[in-house]
Each structure stands twice: as structure tokens, then as C-alpha cells.
Image (cartoon, rainbow, N blue to C red; front, side):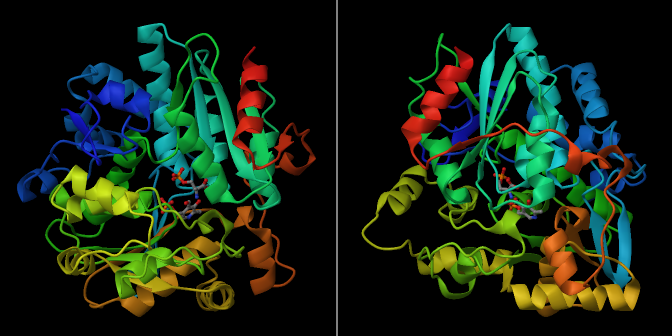
Length: 463
Ligand SMILES: Cc1ncc(COP(=O)(O)O)c(C=O)c1O
Ligand SMILES: N[C@@H](CCOP(=O)(O)O)C(=O)O
């Protein structure tokens, strides 16, 4: 399978080259040239498979030309070996036909583990085969960073640099990253917000001349296609557990960079019957405004109680635009390049987007109420991101007869502030392997919001 750029001007690449390239040379994102499709019978036959076997079946068509079956199975087995639940992504019922899919059972307690533990294993294999050493550069609003560090810290062929917005991630999130003291792990606290971190990552991919010894950058953010690919699997897993493909299943997805919900959109494109995909945003609601009002104007970033979704520039929306504009890379490039006014979708594209997604915005006040209400009625504790997804699901839902799955994207222990605001005095214990996290020694570098400062730091660290 070949992968092509959403801006139509970069060379098409194999799966392995796509994974190790990150951003396309024309500034676009890689997507598969065509999407593999499963028939309803093929999907029905996947019912009852364990998570790893299901992951193999769903992802195999994307990787078959670059990996052997044994290599792919090995990567998957190792990626999910440290999850704390036998189901890997267990479902918990919270209401009539309403389910929470717990995507926080991995080592770093957020859905990012699904793709990043997989990606770490994949990098390790590909880089060993090529005898190549690379530099991983990532931006995080709190969760990608720790999952990427956990996935990559054992890879001999990787030095990993993760930028997070200084003082804008929770204490648990920060410590999960900064207490990993391995020689190949570097944490940068940038005096800016997540969008600044992500812009720096993209600018660094565009000009990599600051790297020594001909080394190249590799991406762990969802600009990397393999991230999205691994996230498609759990949509199939949930639907198969709830009667799919014989009945449609719907999903509500707390959304920031548009990666997770885009994976759901792809699952539907691969044949999984999904009627509703609900985009759930916090006060940083550009995606909700775009779908509901064709308003794509950037607003100042708000610091919310769901900090991982404090994102204004949603990378993966470009992948959707590519499809909305009939895979016309030139049209996407033009739409994104025109900086005279905020982007506006044309009528046809807007109509298509509205037929594909519902959207809702949930502010802090309601987020806190939902955490409290759900806990009082079911004793189930939601993290703030998941609470946003659940509220959006309840508002946007069109049929109570079809299952609605709310993606629980993080463990509540990561977000003590929101939990304490909702339920004063409630402390959520960290899982056993993280019991002493808050006492561990930290290492991080605070840097000004300047590309040159980041590049200097990286080149000195690598020297
Ligand atoms: C806990 C949590 N929930 C939801 C999201 C949104 O996911 P995405 O960026 O894939 O839309 C993120 C990160 O962005 C996150 O860390
Ligand atoms: N919420 C994310 C933001 C980065 O998104 P990504 O999916 O593109 O890596 C985070 O926790 O860092």
C-alpha cells in the first residue's frame, strides 16, 4: 500500500517510510492511497477475537508490504503486554445503551498508549532493520508525551525530545514525563501553549538542518499515520462487543487534535456500521464551531479543566479536508495557505462534514457537574475529558435504541483538580506501578517560546 500527502505534492511512500517520515515534504499529512474495506461477513467473523488478533486483522492490509506476519504479531503482542486489563479496552455500562470504553488501561493511563506503545515497538523494529538512529520530536498537551516516552525509552536507536506547555499540564502528567531519567529522554517545558509546541514541531520537520550527523526527525504526534491506524482497532473492538456489524454502534469522542475521532471515521470507511460520530470539544471549540457554523476563526486558547484538549490548531482536520475536497491535494493546499481570512468550507464540503459528524461544546462548569452527577448516580468516576464526551453524547444522540460508546480517554487520577472541584475531598489513587510517582526525581528544561532556543537545546543535547 502506498501513502500520499494531503497537499498532493510530496512523493508517495511505503508504510515504513511514511512511519519514519512524519510530515510530508509539502507540509501535508500522509494518508493511505485507498482505504481497505471489510465486508459485513468479514467483520462478523472477527467477533470474539482477542484484542491483539483483532488489531492484527484490522491493521494488516496497511502494513502487509513492509512487515512479515510474525513481525507484525510480535509488535502487537509486545505493545499491549503491559495493559492492566485482560480486555485491553473494557466496556462499562453507564446507562441505557450507553457505554464507556476505558482506553486508559495502558501504562500511562490515557488512550495514547494504544498507538504509542505500538509505535515504539514498530520504530524499534524498523530502525534496527535499517541500522538507523533517529531523533523523535513531539509536542504534548499532557498525554502524548508520557505515552511516547514510555514507548521509546528502551529503543537504542532513538533520542526523544518532548515539548509540553510550561505549567499547563497536570502534576501527574508532568511527572509521568519528567521522572523518566533515561539518557535518551529529554523534556522541554516551553513558555507557550500547546499550539506553540505543535507549531515548533512542524517547523522543525520542515527544516531539519539543526540536527547533527545527518540524523532525521521522526514524529510521535498524530501527524504520524501509524498513530491513527492503531486507534482504528478499538472502534471495531467496541462495535463487535455490542452487536456490530449486525447493528450500528455510535461513538462520542473528546476531541482536540482530531486524531482519535478521525480513526473512528476511518473505521466507518472500512465497513464498520457507525451512524453517529460525535465531536466533543471543551471551550477551545474550533471544531464544534466549524461543523455547526462554518466558523474556523482561531480564538485565544482557554486554559480549561480538560487541559489535554486545550488545542486550537487541530492537525488531523487536514486529513478530513482532503476527503471533503474529493482528495484534491491542490484544493487543500490552497484552502490552508490562504491566510487573508479564516478558512471557510464551501457548501458541499460543509454539508458532507455535517453528514459525517455531530458536534457539541462543553465548558468547565458543565464538565464538573457531569463528573459529579455520574458519580452520584453510578459511582463511576469520569475524568474531565471523558465527561465532556459523555455530555456531548447525551445531547447529540439521535437514537436510544442504538448503543452509544463514550471514549474514556484518560484515567481520572491524572486530573486531580477537576475531580476535586467536582467532588471536594475525593482523591483518586494512582495505579500500583505509579504509587511513588509524585516523589520521584524530575529532569526538565524550561525554554522560551523560540524555535532557535529549542533547536540549540536539541543540538547541544545530541552533541
Ligand atoms: C485525555 C485526552 N482526551 C482527548 C484528547 C483529544 O484527542 P485527539 O487529539 O486525538 O482529538 C486528548 C489529546 O488530544 C487527550 O489527551
Ligand atoms: N492531547 C494530546 C495533544 C497531542 O495530540 P496528538 O494526538 O497529535 O499527539 C496530548 O496529550 O499531548
